Image 1: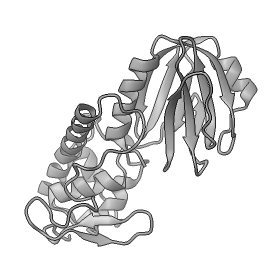
Image 2 (image 1 turned 135 degrees about the vertical axis):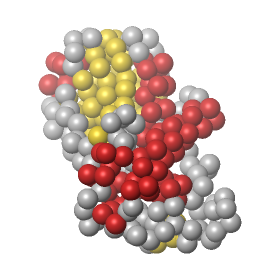
Image 3 (image 1 turned 30 degrees about the vertical axis):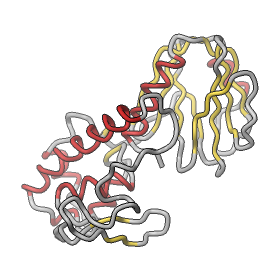
Amino acid sequence: MPELPDIEVFTRNLKKMFGGKTLSRIKLVNNKNIKDSQKDLSKALEGQKLKDVYRSGKEMRFLFSNGKVLGLHLMLTGDLIPFQEQNERKSTKVEFYFNGGTNLALTDRFKAAFIKLDPEDKEGIDALDPKLNYSFLKKALNRKAAIKNVLLDQNVIRGIGNAYSDEILWQTGISPFSKAEAIPDEKINELAKNIKKVLKKATTKIYNSHPDLIHGEVRDFLDIHTKKKEKSPTGAKIRVADRGMLNTYYTDEQVLY
């Protein structure tokens, strides 16, 4: 699933591609998980200029000239694919037609990706919010849950997923299986800094290596969460705990609290 760095890059590039253009038509091809009707989407968005594209956690927001916001969540396998005259993708859920020639399709082979008019954000703080500091984390980690599960909870912190939670915890030297409430204060302070450091560094790397990216995941530069490496940058064996689709990558360098 695309995480904060991926979505940050996608939104920058989508704004470059479609910002200022008028949405002439929106077509709901498959309405699974989409609560808004074709009629409501057309009435709210057609004929409106796209003013901005920005990120909210792991979701995207499309702001139109009439003040309407369209939220978009790619979920696990969603993609945004540009096309010209005709879209032939079989897994398409929504088509966006813009004045100017280039259009956009939301596709998903699992049909889970969705759009929503005027969406509400989850309760969690955005991972890059300046208010995500030691004081915030000290309160947020006052629970018996595993630290990785806290980082993945979008009602606590928005934007972090499976891959970057592993990267952040390795960078901080905390085992992903540690109890959140047991983590010492100095590590909480370090964790708050590393959340932003890891995510910002990843965003820059993705943008520099794939400056026009609007779909897919770039993971080849990750230190820990990768099948391509056997050892961490400091030489420790990378271990993998099988959690179904959410495997956890870690090393024995990380302290279990």
